[in-house]
Length: 116
Image (cartoon, rainbow, N blue to C red; front, side):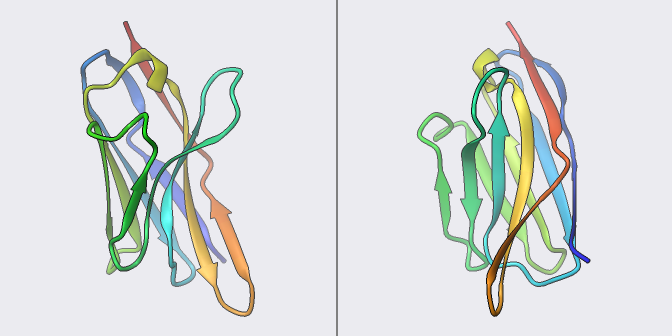
């Protein structure tokens, strides 16, 4: 059974930093990453990292956020610096399992609130 458990969200002032962590279990994962959904907005991609370490970040977070992973621990991290109020959202960890079919799994989400 695949499980993803996020941690590290919270309340921070604009310009501050937070580090999100996601511990995955139950399979071997190819891509892992983060999405977010702000108030009244659709869920959007924040950052993705492959098992080989290739990354893709949304333009809105480039230069401020960094994604990394520890394959031995099945963990993915999101270091968020220079946070802005518009980064306020629920952040969801996602992980992809590629076998006979492709399956994407999601964590329960962690709230990040950036105050101005």
